[in-house]
Length: 234
Image (cartoon, rainbow, N blue to C red; front, side, top):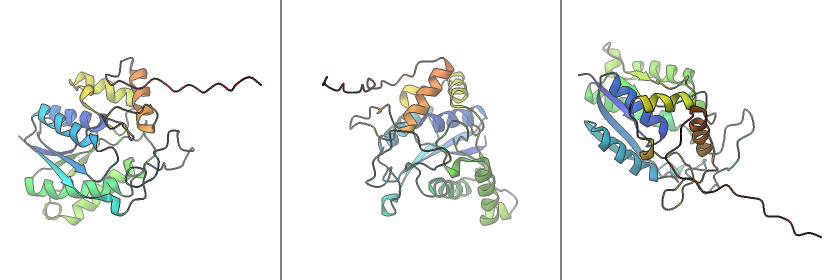
């Protein structure tokens, strides 16, 4: 059985990508990053998901991107609770995050002899991050072929992004068809100390929109929507 490395954040998309890699017939090797992110509850979610999926190995890489900051996820910057302006890259973008993650995954794939690396990036219902686009994935694959022994010897890793052209609703429907338990996943960028989603950040809105458009109920519980405080009569 061929091996595949899967970048597993514990979120909806990466968990679906893991299920796709299993359907494709691979032996699964999951890689998760504890990078100093505000929403560190996703690491525990990834542990649960990897265990349930019975992956061959699950490594959690500890790096601290807080030394650079520059993101609402790795610095003392409030997580936005409204969509960014059209064309603007939101404050939740973590500089070069997917490039860092894919570099680690490429190194591990060489050691494992794995030809396939799965990443759950999406370029339709997403936050506008530049490292989630098809052109980026294609460029990284070409770079990895040039920069690795496996590539030079004619066995370059293939970057698989099976969700990149799917809407969030399509991703959810696919995951459900593959038996994904979305109750085990987390998406929120600003969860409570107990891990409960805020329901207001970009990630929460994209997730709830996807479930709504898929005609399915999100198994996560969200807080009741805030209501405006009425002004006293003059």
